[in-house]
Length: 487
Image (cartoon, rainbow, N blue to C red; front, top):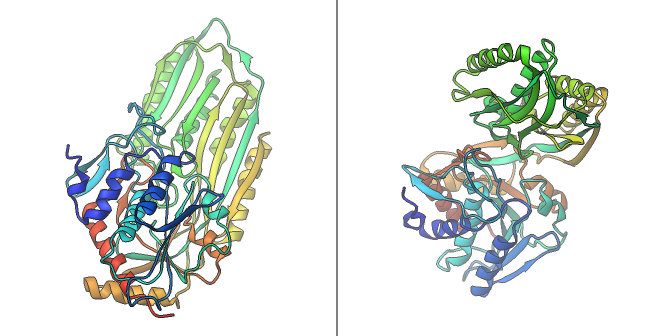
């Protein structure tokens, strides 16, 4: 296993990325990575600060003769999504990511890599370090806690940024320029219940698990129509509850709001007389799901095995309503874009279902490039769970970023890419929620583009970044900075 990332090219980008992956930085625990950036900036004599929202800001003066060019803001976020395989022992708040070279890619051992958005941050640091580059006035904006709520972008002070152009380095397909993104909305759902004492006799305790699914980024991979572990689990439990006196004791499914759930489990009590039939039904159900998702989820695993008997169960009436509501909850792609073929317009991800002994909490992340469609989807999800007796809060709404096809920087970057590589870049929008829409609301005059290297399977332990695409992305960034127009 080759872990020497510093041998890769471009050297400065990989040098910084090799340092970044060793700094724990899950969302909400970004102190060390902020310190790394600030210490780096101070060591280079660059103006820098941390704002009240924990964004880090760095300024680099123009190179000689470029002082009259438009100012550019280079922007990336510092946090990463902490996802790992179930059998991987790893503490994202303490352990360094175990990154390594795997052929043409860099990936990690059983965890997310953090190329989203560590590669973007590394590219910015490389630009700030390299005094041979030709560029106009530069500002670097490293935003905080993007993955769990875009807190840094929402908290960005008005008047801090002075530039005319914002280059967001958080896209994941090299050769594409993004000029728009979806808005988002969180649905936070709570079932309250009084736990019931588990029956002492006549039942067998069992743990049912769904795993082996691909998961991924709930904006980018949602179009792949991958299975949602929460939906798969509750589809079976709801059907099984109609055939036997099934008692739900606990559930723990999914993880972060913006990751498609790969794994889910529930502890149940099954009448001992029905247990053999229940286990056989689980085995048949695995084959059903494998057939339905053939070619998409080829490693799906659905298992049940006896476990230690729990002392309490979820109130049966609440459990029944929960199962029906999860089955009825919208999930996945809801509508494709009419104006941009192949782009998802509206989607939702049932990201989390977890019980704690007194409450069952669920979370959905809704996305849409049409604000009214996003709101209507939120109302539909609220209606499903309200009818089931849950409380629902719709929070964290943010608008999308509307494309500006007449953008001057879009025209300049298209020409630069064609000059470098002999082909025009694709110009598109993304269903994920980029920070551009939020930043642009506070800085309406900014001319914005998002681009990046090729990153596959972000927000999952299969995440990997293509080495050659990092070089193309960085060369394109350097060429773009050298060709920024005059004010």
